[in-house]
Length: 413
Ligand code: ASP
Image 1 (tube, rainbow, N blue to C red):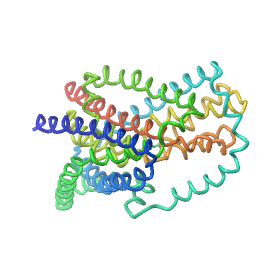
Image 2 (tube, rainbow, N blue to C red):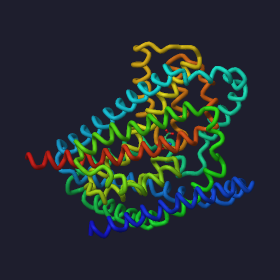
Image 3 (cartoon, rainbow, N blue to C red):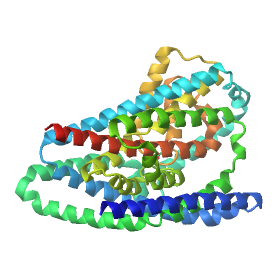
Image 4 (tube, rainbow, N blue to C red):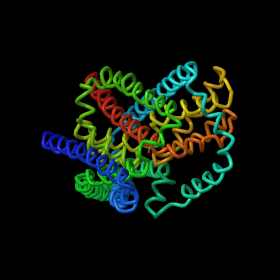
């Protein structure tokens, strides 16, 4: 059974890889032939529709699977331990992401590569006010009901499902019928997910073609050093933090792990939403041998509180703007920044562009001009692609590490 599922997901990795390559190719053709609008108006809606379909499944999936998981755990001690492990892992890797971000940014600062921002800061502030308002407007007004639930109530969904799960377990015999209903609903939702997951390559293709036709590569020019710094930060976090966790905590081959999680990375990269990626992430997590209880707790909660890519991005950008404004952050300010980043990351769900909004919170805490963030608004999508990939990878690494810790704890008992 496990083997069949793994084979299916290997095929999915392959199809997603082809989808990325084809999407980039079509995007380049659209851009070079002056047909970027075709990519934006005709191809993007196809991808967006499929991402919406996946997002629509996320809420019931998270809701029912957490209830089922909690209700099925026998002793309070057992799930307390698992939640404790997950919290420790999430906090540890977020702090690591901040440290890596600070080190990379300071190196770039000392190499004098973070200077250019001062040149455009004054002229763009006026424009930025307009975009900031429009940006906040689109973030405040949700596109549809499911979107509203996804964007505004994910934390509430987690809390409610935990509460219902605990209550079923406490109700004993009287809660059995309700529990059976939840188990059955959860089963049906999971079947729906496995059907929808099969068509993710189409959405990956369409979203890739759109991203390349709309954003191309030219816009990266002006802010190249910031982009390079953030990219280096992402890579270092993958190699150092994830590499270490996979080798020493999860004890699984690193390359094989990345090959297997490619469908999640491809979907996250193109949807730029950790929350929308939950259904794909749960499917892949199972194929990595992670039990149901771990998957259904770690993946949804990770998509809300575990955002290593966002943490790397926030610290590097904050130091970039401080340097550009002529401010040299003291060690205390960097500690304050790390705390703010942890709070921002824990308090915001994984939806497109969330990290950009969090940046204003970090800038505010450091008393920097919040308007400056608009300087990177036009390239934020590129940052978002990277940080979402890292965020979901972090959740996948967390699930295999926690699975391994559970196995070791079981052996000892
Ligand atoms: N888009 C990211 C995610 O969904 C959050 C962010 O913007 O940093 O994980």
